[in-house]
Length: 236
Image 1 (cartoon, rainbow, N blue to C red):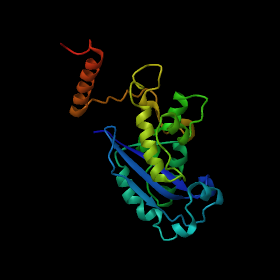
Image 2: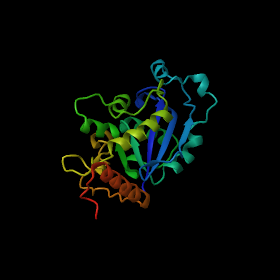
Image 3: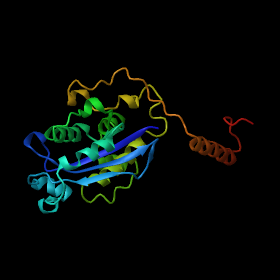
Image 4: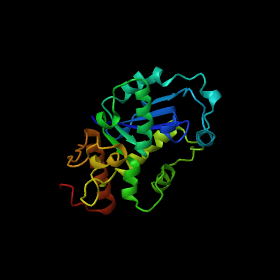
């Protein structure tokens, strides 16, 4: 079983070094390339004011957040949920930086860039679509993923869209040819997180089809044969 989590956060501002905090975190679970619906989502009291610029982006104001739990009150359930999963993040240094800061404030020992495998879909998109806009909205449009409900940036809807983007970008034969970067190497850029993340010389991930996928594949091949009248890849 391969368990992955598409994760997104919303914050009080853009720069963690200026003391900005997380106000919303959402995780969407993917198991064996299927979105399970077993998600994690929580609003958080940041113990500080939300910047006007950030408020315009996500719409989460101080009054709404006032009665929400502190990060320290939800950190155990969040880390339990993330345990033993590969993290999928769009612009990973941003979210990882904020999450790591919150963990440090809670005196938690975890180091995300050491303890978790992290895939940055922004890095993937830049490699796949060079010299194009690669924010989440642009990638959704390019991949025909419906983001019409994204009136504000919200962590849960963004994590859901991110899961769909990741599955779309890694579908087909994207990872099978040498002119593409192996999926295992598409992690957070080391230069952006220090020298703790080694991505060189990792073996290609091997994903074997399960019984249902084999059955669907056979049905698809026979459907193609019926339509074309011939299929050399089916044993007669």
